Length: 317
Image (tube, rainbow, N blue to C red; front, side):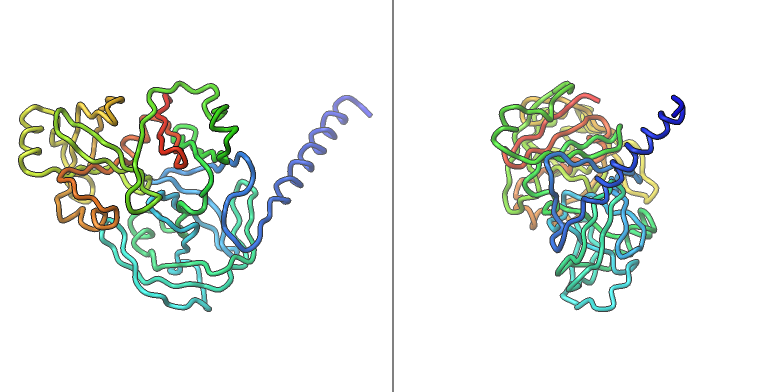
């Protein structure tokens, strides 16, 4: 055998072995992560991270939304689920309401990294036509907190990937998820009502603000009148125009998270008190000033979310 033919033979052998490994990642009934370290490539559409896949042969993208509690929610406006049973109504933080249903069995959900789930039971769905209209027409649902329960994850918008690490006592000591990373800060968070919503203490100048981290939005700021006037007077909150939907945008300076990390954010959406009522009720927020920390932050810094130890690592890109 010539060296050239041997070279191609070895490549084909490795490819076949790799393909076999991918095909072997098939799991039954319950949509949850398996394995020690799992990587999903992501696509960013506007502010939102999506993971590509198929549901019973229908191709599309799942929004990776830490604000969603369920493992998997399907968009039954795009995927035909003839045996679904209507369960009620749901509402998202931005105010859209939708009908919810449950389907006894989903035959197959397959992701582009080779992970496949079959015969999934009691999968919830909703009519997410608003996501199709305003974000991407091939949105087939959400991936939420329960999908990666028992894992911490690294969110990397520059490399376009999410890496999940199974939590363990050994990993808490070794911190292998920090290899070759530059740590800018480690901030502590609290959980109040919902386990999927990390809440952090923030100051903008001398004004106290409660912050929530959530991959499912751009980033927004709501201030009471006195706080807003003071921060504008000092130049810490500046109007920066409007977005394509006509909503006001703000540049926010001198943000200090957990007393440890200082940053500025551009293009944060202005939100009045009425616009935060849904999330305030859901998260038991009583503080007068509130900031949703989303894309505007994650596009500047890599982050690691460690729910078990209630810590967010802020890393340099």
